[in-house]
Image 1 (cartoon, one colour):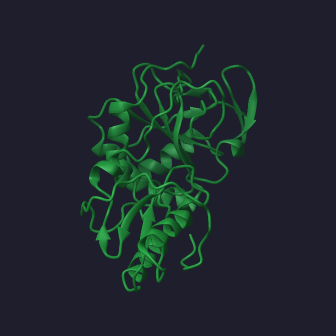
Image 2 (tube, rainbow, N blue to C red):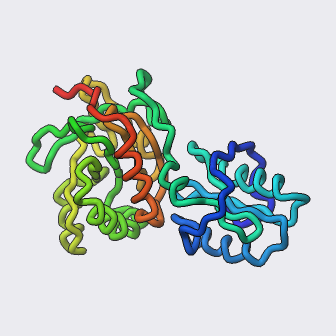
Length: 280
């Protein structure tokens, strides 16, 4: 994301409250560029505001006429190419984002959708998935409230860079049985992916996607689609509810997976349960 005062001019809706809170030392989820922007932001004159969203999006403005304009324009900067509403994190050095607001960052949770697609509120395409032994695996398992669906490959530098942090986050959520991680390697064999994980001592279970070629995926209804239709870049991550509804998507690495832990737990407690996706 560009580090500039003139980032973007997209309107956004501010859904966070104005209660002063200090739940984080720095905004959660920022990559190195975002952290540099945060450091620069703190040196700027009032009126200034910094906004964030799950997945690492951010935006800020400073030197504006009043706090309302600073807040609006920082949210607009953050909102660019982001399907979720951004949240105001800081205003003139006062932290606005409470822990509760961050936990609810994916809410409101959509109901069971009719339209198939990869956007928020749509039902994710029903991929034919399988274990390394070839046993079918449902995209959304019965009783699972949240599925973290992650597409990656050991050939992909951003994928392998973020994987230890993802593994650490999955380990921390191991006792949260309503949250399931499904890691799907693409454009390489399961054996290649597993060998790479073992060489790095990463204890992660992989799920394979049935394919007709290196980049064509099978659906349970017999149709096909290109892997680029679900993973425009690698890695790509989705959070699905128990109906297979897309709650969150991120094209590219997530730089701090642990920042999603409260969001995932809140979603697991409050979103839909019970898969409506048929599996043969």
